[in-house]
Length: 486
Image 1 (cartoon, helix red, strand yellow):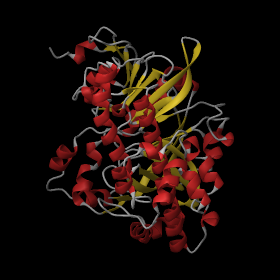
Image 2: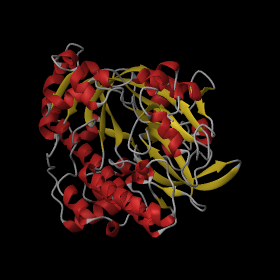
Image 3: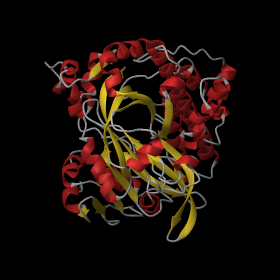
């Protein structure tokens, strides 16, 4: 019999809810969801809470199964799902806890420009960027790499880009994991994955991926904003994309294998989309090695897009990127599994932390973040939809102690893509956004309909929950000026 989640989930505070560990047969730990009442109404409209409970059944899970305030239904894990498995015990790693777009992530660049300096040129600037940034379904990149280069890219990520002159040392230092997840092994990747990723490095793709020119319109923390080099009316650039067809193929390959491995190792799951491997098994180690390759590919992809963005702005403004101050604030991963040490019941434990549509949010003092940010905490970038706002936050000790150093990754969908297309029928979304002063350049009208603002929760509500729950602390809010979509 289906569970009545509305009457099962328990409200703990204005922003925290609990699924008891006895709510569903097989749960090993409780579920915890961060949401206010408005967001919970949306969450209850799909099967996301069922998925939070399903994740709580996984072998080796510790403390709790988490749902972030952008929570919605996904493959296996919900989008906005976080869970940590005991590496040295019976923990499992599951492709459904990472997703198809491995290391879909977002980075944010600052500039020395202010709104007054560029508002008269915004139309021409967005046209230039649209010409220079490869985007859309099936659109290949301008970077041509050999098979040997491909192996080096997936092994070394952003570091390969730096060796080739497409990244600076500062870019690498201001990328999560320095743009390279250790343990990558190209031998764990199929030939088909390399074929699909052959010409996609430096491409934006389609779906919810974007490049956005923004203006900082609100500062919450002057000291942290100063450390990040931004102020009121500063112009910033945000880039959101992932591992493209390369990562998608790796996910497909290992999801198929995981169903066989679950039988082999006697791993019982309430949903076969959660099938996985013991972390300490040949299959588990191979999946991690392949996933790391996709993560590194994604970091290289975003780095080359950064290179193209700098070149595009250099061409438009007739200035070099250093003169314009186009430096990377930070780059965070969304869909990834990482081996980290966290305190569990007062003891350090090595865990495999799955973040599916969730962002790392490490606190001040962490050695895993750049030295220049250790006084304030890791930058946390939370994009919204293309008609409202995005936010820059910092990680907190509360996040480290309670959610394995994790927070949400965006606004979170409120409509399926099909529903969004139906809701856009008879409307001109680009004209609607233009009336708000937002220039949109896109390859596909259907893609714009799918990504219309109404398809997403209001990111303001999401970020208020994050801030109130202590999973991140607000630093600045950015408003979109121009958006490039596939």
